[in-house]
Length: 221
Length: 337
Image 1 (spheres, helix red, strand yellow):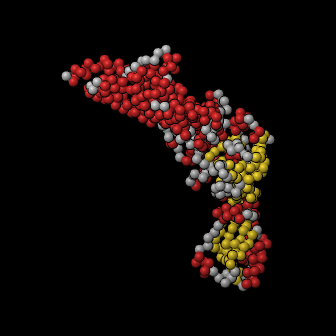
Image 2 (tube, rainbow over the protein chains, first blue to last red):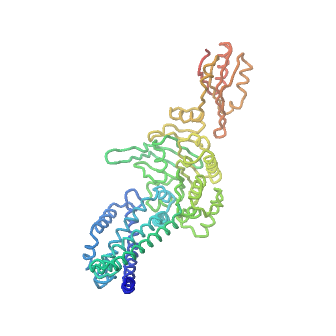
Image 3 (spheres, rainbow over the protein chains, first blue to last red):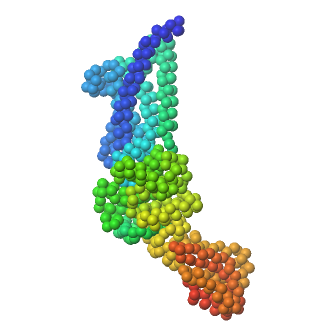
């Protein structure tokens, strides 16, 4: 009985799993692509640093806080016009990826900024004293020294994205979380609910485990 | 040549101003090892950091080989910094990069081609004696080794000047010695001007040619190390020198004493003459050396002895006159009981 129910669930689960991976992967890539430079910019334009610029720092900081203060569900719906502009549609996993990305960018940017703050100021100063260009300092000192922290940040962002993607169902995004809500919660189907939760637990564990392994590998301190 | 012209650095925070460096003017000759000594908070670190504009002076100029650093734009300043090496108390190596990569970083800043970087890093590793640690990460090195990497990085682009910010303060005494020896070698063999700041008179004594004593952001005394050692004027200078030439005479010796206790200072040649022996043979006094030390400062001997002289009062006085004539300093610590 239970086994049959599980077997029936496999195609649905498989599709949902791929949708989750798809959404998380796209938004993670975009979060890194935009969030990383944004986080670096937030750091290097801060007071006393080599590209100190109060205006850039304030504007970016405000924008980041603004997006981060909007609840994700509202962001999801509120960004529908933008989603249509970018993807041509407002439903499906691709559409959901737009809002997920927008939410993940400032989240990841702040994590990057925080890990850069942990670098000893003297190391940056030593690079300035040696005559390094700002670009060299960013590439060879900041990113190099903050690598373990950034890897941890990617791990945290990925797991947050898995969580957020559950809400993608609102715009027909699909995914495992959506499956859990639609079948498990609304239809009181405990089998689906528990199965999906188990899958999610495994997924998060794997992400966390791999993240830590990679972080340790790149950590030379 | 480095000229510091009326440099002042004032830190302004919300409701108060702190003066880091207070109208300092100083000329450091090419090829010398110049020390700045002072307690923490004296402003010596700020002064040093002004020399490569890690700290921009509030007013005044920094001239290095005739170029005013404060007038340069950021790209010109970056180019100028290639020729000013700097090492730090806490080394500040990039922990995620190997020894090789840390040194190569400085050469990359100078846009050197890859083959040249490879060759130059190996040369530098040879100079600092770390050829076998090429691929190690900083975490695998001892403090002294890390400082050697720091030195190699600082020397990468053949600088004219090397700034040392408490470079040995985090090291144990024997490692300190070896780093100082290396710095001296760099100064003599490569002709690099070294400016170092420290709170340890030992460091100044070992390698500096000239030294400035700093207090409250000002330079209160300046001279060759030998001048300062033999003829300190300011209290602070004396206290630094005492940290090296201080003798503690045990209490029971002071109590047992019957004769006149004197401190005799010998400088230069007089330290090598047999003055004490002559004195003892010429006058009817007995001499008992309680403590003695000869320091070699810039290879010039400086001797300090504490002696107890016993004998007839007149003879002792004549002996003391004789000594004060032929030596450079005589201080009666306690008269005959």
